[in-house]
Length: 197
Image (tube, rainbow, N blue to C red; front, side, top):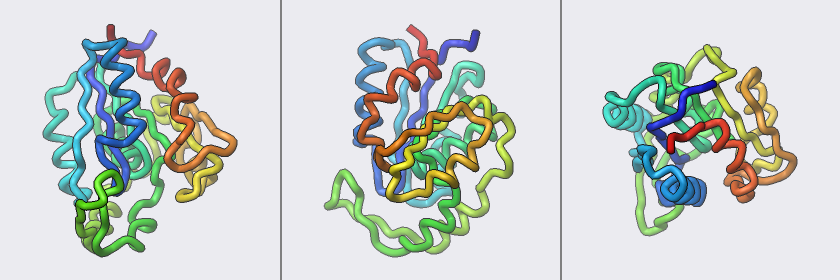
């Protein structure tokens, strides 16, 4: 029987924020049903190196056996990096497999998805930071729940499925990159999380 989780980290994707639908919905459900669970969904800076530094410092004292990380898109990549370093189980939703390659096309000024009035600059150096932190082969794929939509219009589902081979995989016919049908996958995520009461 896996241990119940007392600490949960949620990592949002590129141009996203803690205001994302998935983060808000999951947080609201957990707050209602498992109020003892410690939840943290930080606003990640554009620099991957700074994002990982923020995550590392914010979770440094978390108990390894009772912590879990969830990530969506670029957040799924960060979740994988962190899980490999810490030995945490993870949930990745349409995870970015090679963000250094994919985000090279986005160098320049960007707007925040949930707050279009907010702008940030994605620098070429950030691509190098992503490349430097890309994990090798996954050490414990069975500790990962991968939720992958074949209808993802941003990332190739075949590449995601190949990267997370050996993981507990929920391969969805249709859907989209944002997982607009997130509600349908909530039971599987909650079963995997095993949150504390």
